[in-house]
Length: 241
Image (cartoon, rainbow, N blue to C red; front, side, top):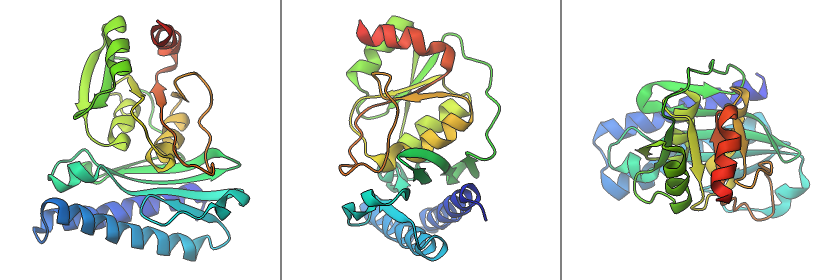
């Protein structure tokens, strides 16, 4: 199984585990989120340590060990991206599995279990026709001031949504054209989405235009831009304004 195939396989199966738990009715609210995080993390970490024992691992739900920084290949996973949405019974949550090599997102998959869909870097979707006016996905609870300001300059329609993975994949799927985030994230929030978005031909960078780099000693990665390439100049000009 290739690295990309493993990403897709694990994200899909973790997503099914989580979806089955969500609809089972056995847990609700915060207890559902906690149980989902625990189960998905245990499944993904056990599988990766079995299938790629020489590689390092960075998971939101595991104690971080910076020894991973001495390893070229590191798996970066978010077992349940959008725990709040998942706990509320919503559909805008995701599972992220990615491999970074030399600090670059090389392979990844984002499962959207409630949509019965896994988007993957080794089988990218063809880009849809752009929306006019452009559509920008933002947090449904705390949209970033910079994103709102850029949307106003570009006359973009705001699309509130839950998890980072769901928002990024909305751009990949053509439901939106821009995902601009400045509210703070970690590597596990965006490594898999970036791998999938880049494979689909989208622009991915920090908001200053610098590349997305992974496996840093501090995994905090506060800002992100995923968008159609033709929108990059106008978005960067709006950010400077």
